[in-house]
Image 1: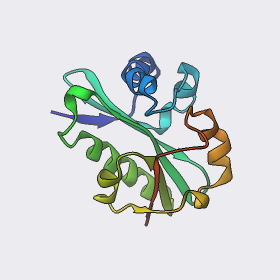
Image 2: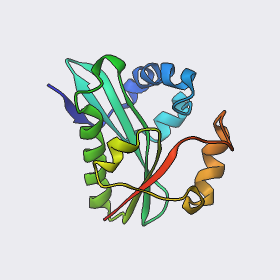
Image 3: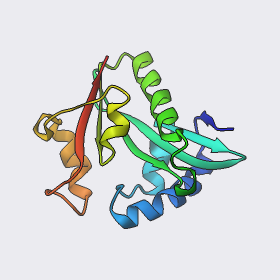
Length: 152
Protein backbone atom coordinates (compact mmCIF):
# COMPACT_ATOMS: atom_id res chain seq x y z
CA UNK A 1 0.00 0.00 0.00
CA UNK A 2 1.29 3.45 -0.93
CA UNK A 3 1.52 6.11 1.79
CA UNK A 4 2.28 9.73 0.98
CA UNK A 5 3.86 11.87 3.67
CA UNK A 6 6.46 14.54 4.31
CA UNK A 7 10.09 13.36 4.35
CA UNK A 8 12.67 14.01 7.02
CA UNK A 9 16.26 15.04 6.45
CA UNK A 10 17.43 11.45 6.84
CA UNK A 11 15.69 10.62 3.52
CA UNK A 12 17.70 13.13 1.45
CA UNK A 13 20.20 10.48 0.29
CA UNK A 14 17.49 8.06 -0.78
CA UNK A 15 15.69 10.86 -2.63
CA UNK A 16 18.87 11.77 -4.53
CA UNK A 17 19.45 8.11 -5.39
CA UNK A 18 15.95 7.87 -6.85
CA UNK A 19 16.59 11.01 -8.94
CA UNK A 20 20.01 9.98 -10.22
CA UNK A 21 18.99 7.91 -13.30
CA UNK A 22 16.56 10.59 -14.48
CA UNK A 23 19.16 13.33 -13.93
CA UNK A 24 21.63 11.33 -16.01
CA UNK A 25 19.05 11.02 -18.79
CA UNK A 26 18.45 14.79 -18.65
CA UNK A 27 14.80 14.44 -17.66
CA UNK A 28 15.08 16.08 -14.22
CA UNK A 29 17.42 18.78 -12.96
CA UNK A 30 20.09 17.77 -10.47
CA UNK A 31 19.28 18.74 -6.89
CA UNK A 32 22.15 18.73 -4.43
CA UNK A 33 21.73 17.30 -0.96
CA UNK A 34 21.78 20.86 0.38
CA UNK A 35 19.08 21.98 -2.08
CA UNK A 36 16.82 19.10 -1.10
CA UNK A 37 17.48 19.63 2.60
CA UNK A 38 16.78 23.35 2.29
CA UNK A 39 13.43 22.62 0.62
CA UNK A 40 12.58 19.44 2.57
CA UNK A 41 9.22 20.84 3.74
CA UNK A 42 8.10 21.31 0.13
CA UNK A 43 8.34 17.59 -0.72
CA UNK A 44 5.65 14.93 -0.64
CA UNK A 45 7.07 11.42 -0.70
CA UNK A 46 5.38 8.14 -1.66
CA UNK A 47 6.40 5.16 0.45
CA UNK A 48 5.76 1.47 -0.05
CA UNK A 49 7.01 -1.17 2.37
CA UNK A 50 9.49 1.23 3.96
CA UNK A 51 10.97 2.36 0.65
CA UNK A 52 10.68 5.70 -1.13
CA UNK A 53 9.07 4.98 -4.50
CA UNK A 54 8.35 8.54 -5.64
CA UNK A 55 8.13 12.19 -4.74
CA UNK A 56 7.73 15.73 -5.93
CA UNK A 57 8.16 19.21 -4.52
CA UNK A 58 5.64 22.02 -4.31
CA UNK A 59 7.83 25.08 -4.75
CA UNK A 60 6.25 28.44 -3.88
CA UNK A 61 7.22 31.24 -6.28
CA UNK A 62 4.88 33.96 -4.98
CA UNK A 63 1.71 34.35 -2.88
CA UNK A 64 -0.32 33.27 -5.92
CA UNK A 65 1.99 30.90 -7.86
CA UNK A 66 3.52 27.54 -6.97
CA UNK A 67 5.27 24.92 -9.08
CA UNK A 68 5.30 21.15 -9.04
CA UNK A 69 8.90 20.14 -9.63
CA UNK A 70 11.18 17.12 -9.46
CA UNK A 71 8.33 14.63 -9.92
CA UNK A 72 9.77 11.14 -9.94
CA UNK A 73 8.41 7.63 -9.53
CA UNK A 74 10.71 4.62 -9.33
CA UNK A 75 10.71 2.94 -12.73
CA UNK A 76 9.49 -0.41 -11.35
CA UNK A 77 6.49 1.35 -9.78
CA UNK A 78 5.30 3.41 -12.75
CA UNK A 79 1.83 2.94 -14.20
CA UNK A 80 0.22 2.40 -10.80
CA UNK A 81 -1.16 5.91 -10.20
CA UNK A 82 1.58 6.91 -7.76
CA UNK A 83 2.48 10.10 -9.65
CA UNK A 84 -1.18 11.10 -9.74
CA UNK A 85 -1.50 10.53 -5.99
CA UNK A 86 1.61 12.58 -5.21
CA UNK A 87 0.44 15.42 -7.46
CA UNK A 88 -3.04 15.40 -5.90
CA UNK A 89 -1.56 15.69 -2.40
CA UNK A 90 0.61 18.59 -3.59
CA UNK A 91 -2.36 20.33 -5.23
CA UNK A 92 -4.39 19.99 -2.04
CA UNK A 93 -1.48 21.51 -0.13
CA UNK A 94 -1.26 24.40 -2.65
CA UNK A 95 -4.98 25.06 -2.34
CA UNK A 96 -4.73 25.03 1.45
CA UNK A 97 -1.92 27.59 1.29
CA UNK A 98 -4.07 29.89 -0.84
CA UNK A 99 -2.11 29.52 -4.07
CA UNK A 100 -4.12 30.52 -7.15
CA UNK A 101 -2.05 28.77 -9.84
CA UNK A 102 0.28 25.78 -9.99
CA UNK A 103 2.85 25.59 -12.79
CA UNK A 104 4.63 22.54 -14.14
CA UNK A 105 7.27 22.10 -16.82
CA UNK A 106 7.04 18.51 -17.99
CA UNK A 107 7.32 15.92 -20.72
CA UNK A 108 4.20 14.23 -19.24
CA UNK A 109 1.44 16.38 -20.76
CA UNK A 110 -1.33 13.76 -20.51
CA UNK A 111 -0.73 13.06 -16.83
CA UNK A 112 -1.15 16.72 -15.92
CA UNK A 113 -4.01 17.42 -18.33
CA UNK A 114 -6.00 14.62 -16.65
CA UNK A 115 -5.56 16.60 -13.40
CA UNK A 116 -6.93 19.84 -14.87
CA UNK A 117 -3.72 21.51 -16.06
CA UNK A 118 -3.80 23.43 -19.34
CA UNK A 119 -0.88 24.30 -21.59
CA UNK A 120 0.47 27.85 -21.46
CA UNK A 121 3.17 29.61 -23.41
CA UNK A 122 6.63 29.36 -21.91
CA UNK A 123 6.81 33.12 -22.30
CA UNK A 124 4.17 33.28 -19.54
CA UNK A 125 6.55 31.65 -17.05
CA UNK A 126 7.99 34.10 -14.52
CA UNK A 127 11.55 35.20 -15.32
CA UNK A 128 12.80 34.19 -11.88
CA UNK A 129 11.87 30.58 -12.68
CA UNK A 130 13.87 30.64 -15.90
CA UNK A 131 16.96 32.19 -14.38
CA UNK A 132 16.88 30.21 -11.14
CA UNK A 133 16.26 26.74 -12.59
CA UNK A 134 16.05 26.45 -16.35
CA UNK A 135 19.46 27.96 -16.92
CA UNK A 136 20.95 24.95 -15.08
CA UNK A 137 19.48 22.53 -17.62
CA UNK A 138 21.67 21.06 -20.34
CA UNK A 139 18.85 21.72 -22.84
CA UNK A 140 18.56 25.44 -22.08
CA UNK A 141 17.45 27.44 -24.06
CA UNK A 142 16.10 24.79 -26.46
CA UNK A 143 13.63 23.02 -24.20
CA UNK A 144 11.15 20.33 -25.21
CA UNK A 145 9.23 20.45 -21.94
CA UNK A 146 5.67 21.73 -21.98
CA UNK A 147 4.48 24.43 -19.58
CA UNK A 148 1.11 23.75 -17.99
CA UNK A 149 -0.87 25.61 -15.33
CA UNK A 150 -3.71 24.62 -13.05
CA UNK A 151 -5.84 27.47 -11.78
CA UNK A 152 -8.01 27.24 -8.68
